[in-house]
Image (cartoon, rainbow, N blue to C red):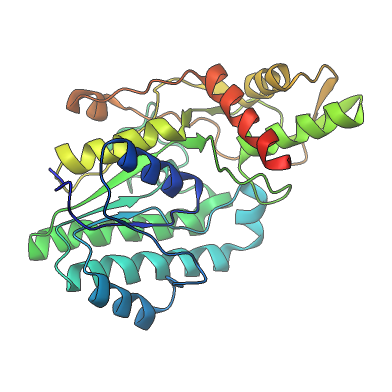
Length: 310
């Protein structure tokens, strides 16, 4: 169990996941939370990260910092996604180890699993096949991070764990028109179409891929839960175990946003992985289950998006 007075560093607290973890920690009465903005601490700079850890000596670390993006961003900047994520992970994890951090939790992504992995995806399927090419660089970086945690545990008996979430959405998401993930991209696109009175909205692919979505506050609850209740080398999947086609998702987002125009599909654009749903039986066996339904979560995310426009 984490000491309520322990020093907790949340790396990436300005991002959607890190921000949600900070809120959940505060909700549970943890008050000694350490954060740094990118301008205050560039996690890709090894010397700066080492100096920060030597000075602050955090007892616990949530590593939620990452360079993230959707299909368009990933495919156009493969080298950047590998470099920045590898540097962030290795610097933070190694500095935590060097300064005797009691426990670290590494946040990855379900894209680490093989493109044609059996469904639902179990944690044990890692490295059992080829990765999806559109996010291969990001996946390789995340696999390296979780494996480094595993190897430190094996060699030095550290207590570092990894969590692999499915597609996330919710407050503080990135709604950039080109670099966002599917959920925030759809929310923005349908909102703008509604405001402009556009008769149609065109989406990538054919709408057939199956995806799973987890509200970020539910993930944050799991992250704190695991820090207090789980130790082990094998990663833990974080999701709902429920899936929806991208076509079904676009229709649901359009309904919540209030857009009634036509939805078109550009089949010249990539679909990405055909199906991706996680087996979450391990997390559920530990005593956790998601709380927020997809429709309720989209409503909350849309309210957050509109608040950001003000």
